[in-house]
Image (cartoon, rainbow, N blue to C red; front, side, top):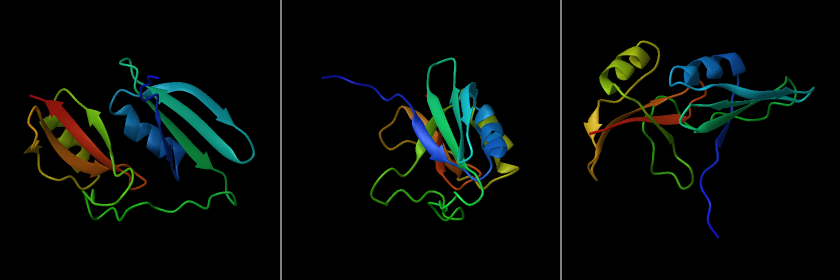
Length: 133
């Protein structure tokens, strides 16, 4: 049996705000669905990666923030701790994001091959921004 990662799914508080955040990295709306309980948007890049955003309507929303947005990164928790997005210009990306959200400093990866920093999306999900060397 073989397989590959198809998409990640995130529940958000504000669908428009989350779409704007991920659009900065080249994600565009591929499909969307809305009913009385939830709105779902599948965003994809030209490279084929996909993020599925869920936003529950008032009364249906029982989700809470998964992490303290002031503690970036917090990767010692069991389970999925962050997603990584690759960019072409890490310094410019950090400068743009740092205007709106906390970012760690750019560091070389311990295993080599890329540099990275951490930030978070509008709902506190940890995002690692990477650039290959």
